[in-house]
Image (cartoon, rainbow, N blue to C red):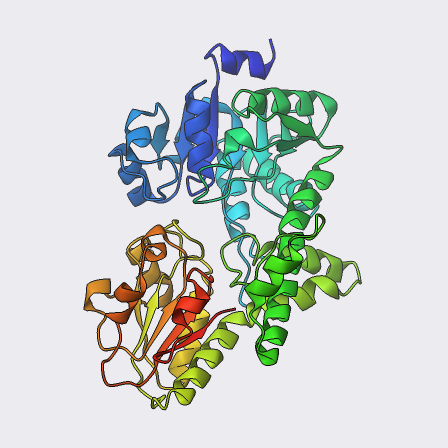
Length: 438
């Protein structure tokens, strides 16, 4: 009997190693069909899950309360599973080199609790070769088992989009791969239990790794092009969104917009690919050029805000600035690698200590990672400038009258920076407003 058949019959379990924005929804999805162990080193997070609280807001508290996932911070429980899915983050270091510490640590823990006949599937975004060249040796060393004999490996890149309620695990075609045809077949069948959109069987593990890393690199480059256009058109006095709206009437024009590129995927994955390319003697030109543009956009926004304060005859040093939104994307509490912090840090260089409001964000995470403490939106009064930074639903609802209440009454101009282009530009291009957007 195959491992897949044993899992379906309830004789074997699946484990999820890493229960964040990606791993937890996968665990919950599989638990509707089979027995699942959900493991995470963060005991506090595990306690929240056990108490029916979803800190990620990906599936909601009610789903967490009703799921049959066996949440645990006890690594020895992994010995009870035979099919392991590793979904830990793969960030970059300050010098933009890959930080493989989480995936190496997960491999170490899993290796210490690995049993014969297991299949391990990595979902973390990596450059081609990491699964076989870095993870396998760790698994073998820690377990004393031999890959290909005592256990098998596969790779299936995550495609979950945090905060997106439409494109979910079940509705996105899943790339799967295995070290041999038998493993590939097992991995494909297991994922087909939950992925309604079906699976794509990649030719090899390295092909699957490469496919994932170029998905976000392609998106990053396209956004970088839009950001460069935004810089050019702002110098020309042309509204970028109006240009894109006009160009978008052509059937094959790609629908991308300028913006801050943060988070732990689009702003990170290209560096994994260029790092590996450098090792092979090739220096990226297009990919790294796009990265440089996108990494500088927070500074560009802050400088544009300062220029508008000067235009409005408002003293820059110690100007009161309110920033609405801090997460890396809308309607998602995740603040990791948010580019809003670049705006904050650049404004501090000008002697401005901005107030930040974000009820959606994980406040504890923001304070831990950045030393940022949020201000209640109701307490943001008498400000000189407002930065509408993140398209949270609550900020989309703000009317001109709502925004008026933030500003200091004595200023002749209200400086408004609308990064996401949420507002009707013409409504704010008035005598009392200085409106700017990407």
